[in-house]
Amino acid sequence: MTPRSLRITVSAACPDGEAIERAAEWLRRGGIAAIPTDTLYGLAADPFSAVAVQRIFTIKDRATERALPLVAASIEQVDAHLGALPPVGQRLAERYWPGPLTLVVAAPETIGRDVIGGGVTVGVRVPAHAVTRALCAACGVPLTATSANISGQPPTSDPDEVLQRLGDRIDILVDAGVTPGGPPSTIVDVTSDVPRLIRAGAIAWDHVLASIRA
Image (cartoon, rainbow, N blue to C red; front, side, top):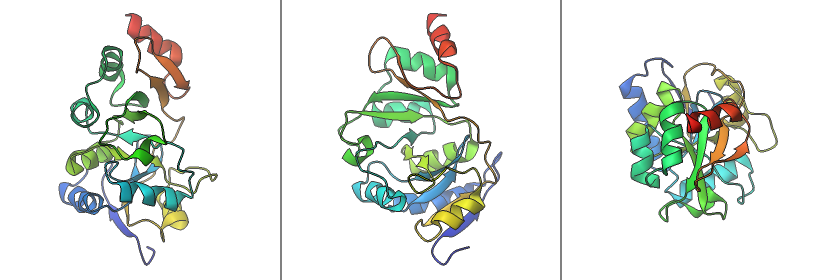
């Protein structure tokens, strides 16, 4: 463990509530955590805290015009904090969440402006990882989930690599072991009646379209 970052080990399948609460307390106070997802490790912060969001950009050496993706505990949490999903988004969420499908929706006025990179939309998904969802639930809000790496470097599924790269920059590592890796989430814009593919990923675009037509 590095001098700065705290490492909390949790079970990926059945995360301990006390450990999750310890990590959530850091996040609620504006801290930055490296957390597991159903693909890779990400950097979590409260997206409604301008100070916490700015720390993410500093940690990653990331350009502020690049938006940050979010993860949430449930459809209900998305509805409560980002607004009700549009009909096509609701249908896709019910079909693919929890899972690697990011939906781009209209951003609420309350969200940090740096989160949306100067735009008017935000991407969010409910991941198929019990630890990620438990952390979002404990914090009471969706969290950022940009990859846990310096911009330009490859992302990682290994918590040890996260500490090697970012251990002196983050506050806490939530270690649930090596994550599944694989392709990134598919990103779909659902701000209009016709969904639009933003990034191909783990869920094939033709499957997304077929689920809407079904």
